[in-house]
Length: 236
Image 1: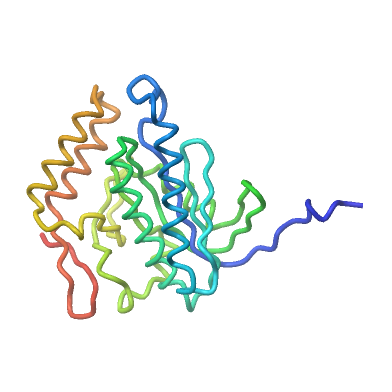
Image 2 (image 1 turned 120 degrees about the vertical axis):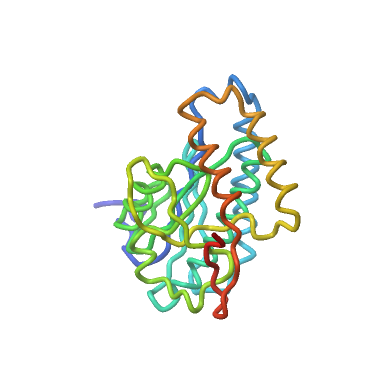
């Protein structure tokens, strides 16, 4: 007879975000405190998630394995936009904090069924977020197709901007991307700070350079402007 501890969890719908640290391989050579900084980031993200409690029926669950952070919120399709907005806020916070800590992250947000047991997670939303979060070539987070299909832009917050994220292969689409710069007052000054942070990540070898340059292009070319429905659009 199987122990109750090993009963398979029930699949249900919800929002899933995967984030991973860029340049984690060999990080100990350039940043001996990386593991501590990542632990602080994960702990801070959990606290940020706790502050979202009550906005949707499901709680925000944060898991981490090595350099990957996974965020889960169970919800039905009617609450999907609210949950996606929550994950967008958490992703924006994570990007800003990770750059400050010199362990920048990229990721993707999906919607669909999933199940969690301890540090094991399965489901269509997990597979989709996992596939997309390593596909982009920048520091940033965007919605995957499943999340786009349920996202109600009329109820979306101003933290989103339509933008074509740089992918490892050409893909002509403009998903909603997290505008992690929306709190900036002096964009020019903040961009200079970001570039200074990127210089400190050196040596900027070719496999890292494209990610940093694509990120700079995003923050320099995208000036999000809220439209009449509270959505953000590309300012170009």
